[in-house]
Length: 212
Image (cartoon, rainbow, N blue to C red; front, side):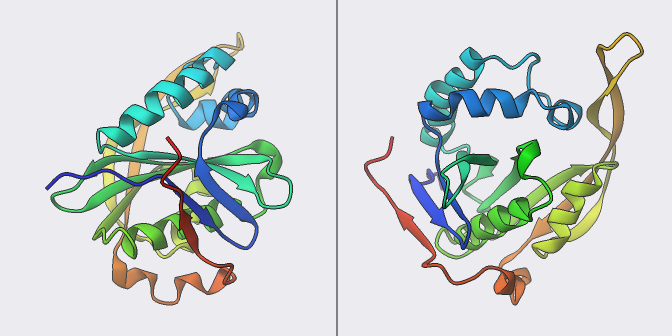
């Protein structure tokens, strides 16, 4: 069984998740150069606006069309400012599973945006898309990401030892790789019972078939 994710807009009380577009280039580039993003992800550094444009216009559409994943911009409902991204990857349509990850801009952290966006995405995946498993992987020392997984109802399944490469600042100001563990989390349809109470009923999500 193969498939692709539809173009989608997901609304919560405070956020709108939608496809990335070229207007997001400056904000996306700025967010990807943040020290916390560099520490816990493998995005190339420095992350230029050309790299952001390539991601938006080439990589993200190719991933969706091939059925491998989906990249969503997370924006504030009131200001339309880019809060972060939610990314789905390594999608397996036969077993109906996908891996979910999230990045939040430094100015927007501490507001609960990551858990709000992740939970809304999970509800859509396990409900509308009929997926049976969502997987998250968090670096062993990335407590903020682990808290998001816990808030949305994920169950910790175990540790992949030495499976993650994080990055640390060296004395000369450059970045060096450091190996650490991955904590594996999963979210199944039955895990969502009661998990959505923290999100206000704001009309759910809406599909837009004309977005490419």
